[in-house]
Image (cartoon, rainbow, N blue to C red; front, side):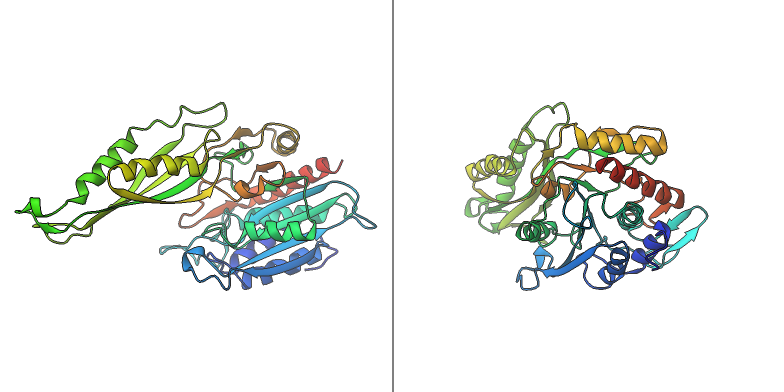
Length: 385
């Protein structure tokens, strides 16, 4: 890359897509992004986390990157952070062209990660190169583990940032938030998530002699029915109602005449900011234990809200200056790494149209990449004004 030439977001996105990076990502895709950032004046730090984690479910090893660009002559000005992920979900079979062989067909750029979210990262790098280096402090917080366990990704980056004294005053996460057209939606919060596993043990036996056995299925059904009757809340001004869903029931009994030894179920709860994940898990655990079961829970993130204020207004003003529309503030959808970063400072998510993310033939409009670059440049200009 010629450091004196304006960066082309389509070229940057194409090069990132071409680097295969199924979660957890390391290596090639970080090799691809580092020279892009160096050409834009950033100092780049890369590190691996989770390489010695013995639990494969934790998703290690993961590569992470922190890139910073300080004003020449000191640390004056505001500190604006951009966060994103280079890892992608597995592509699946049936693509019209290779998932990691980016191709422009018509007005669209195809490839895994075009939308979620290599495209937005490319746009931000291109936008940053347009903004004078002495305007203010910039940080890019880039992980290889957002689509996976998210154990050794952004949380590890936050520890690294704390140790190095890197503290943005506001963070934009470049997740694909737009729905029908670029700029119609931004995220100012997300619901929390807790996953739970219930197990009920019984006594195996012959169905003709039930008095000699103890059927765990009936107990599990009782537990699930009691949980299904729970109304956690009716929503808030910014959040939809919390919900608990049973996502799997397993017995593993191949015989029709055997009462099984155990039965289990998996549940997932998405909750708003009226609750904490551990409190919900404790409530359901009490129900499971009352009927002879056990419950294990993992809280993957708490709910958070960045109330409308300076950052959300900055995003809306920048979007309106390019697209003519002001994005609606929303808290819908799944989780993102904003759930961690919200502990540092105000966080808003804004990015491309999300219609094809995680799908076969994921694609982004070339015009949207160009417009998003303009939007990100407008955000930085306003942030540093």
